[in-house]
Length: 114
Image (cartoon, rainbow, N blue to C red; front, side, top):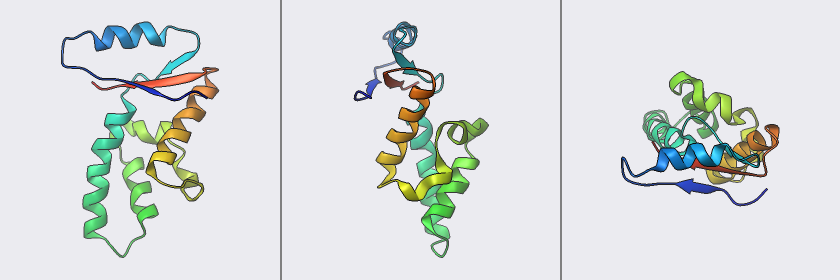
């Protein structure tokens, strides 16, 4: 799998059009929801929960945050039941989305901020 790409830009600059065009390519996977933004939003929740419940393991708190994500976006995308196999959060995110792209028969993937 090739390195991922990220589409960023200011509002009304054409990032949505670029995302749609790229997602129509047979080798490119772009999820309909912004994975990066979903993770960032939920990581704030994760940090707060872990700060208030330090006795609980990080794994348990992160699993709860993923399950509680808006419309279960992260639960559908990320392989959170196998958290122990990942080196860190970056590895977790990268390998989970790689797996999703491979399931769709794509060679590379990207993400677009809203």
